[in-house]
Length: 349
Image (cartoon, rainbow, N blue to C red; front, side, top):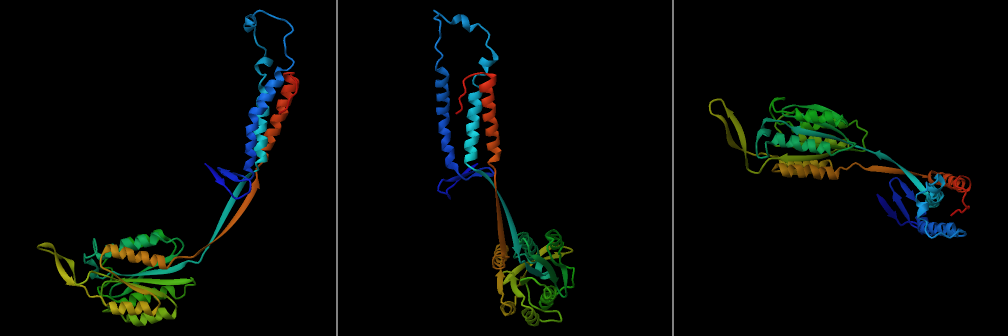
């Protein structure tokens, strides 16, 4: 691919990995037909026959010598040499660019509610599955941030400490299921466990994303106290409340009649979730469906972008010897062929 670069008075263009600093030199290529014409005229001078024949057909059947067959060899050699020398004059260069990236990553902990109420199907296929899929997409979109996972119901625990091993983290998220912990909603404990994972971090920014569908009804630490702890360690908290407004379909597995659904009320303590997020400089979001939940994670992703500093090193190497040396060799070859092998008058273009 040829790319023209108009950043010098003479113009440049790039061909593959080579760029030509004095591209105007290629206009000299128009002189090649002139070289061929002059050489042809020179070869015609002084070659008038001394004998007159009525027909030259008899000479057509005579075998031609190797000198006759190669009489154009010097012209070809000089022509190729001219192309090489013009290319050398155009100053081919190879630009090697090295990019060094420096990042100050963000440490993030996702604290997720896995209580039984997450089986409600107002988010498709249900709240937990939707939260799992969106969290996986969020992890897949980060590049240099350490991300961990805390889960809570009546108690809380660290499912995965902050790590750069996103494959491990995704496997942990995929294995999350309800029933791993005694049922309940200990929002304060889920937040406190996440704070404990981040309090000793030396990252430039530390963030907790807490997702729940209920009200705090268990645990030894209330959410406001846990938020004050996060504030002390300068940890920012984003809270997400999931669930439709009013009621939501909840599956009940009956041993006699199979699965049936009943509508259950959606009880979200939005006032508390807003308070603890605002206290740390974060923000509260409400997701009433799966699409809205995905948009919320996208918003958080945009607000918590890792700053990447790029240092670009450029090394330009002159590559004109690649064409200059073959050009000089072709000149020498053409001169030897013209002067000694073919024994014709010397003419150098």
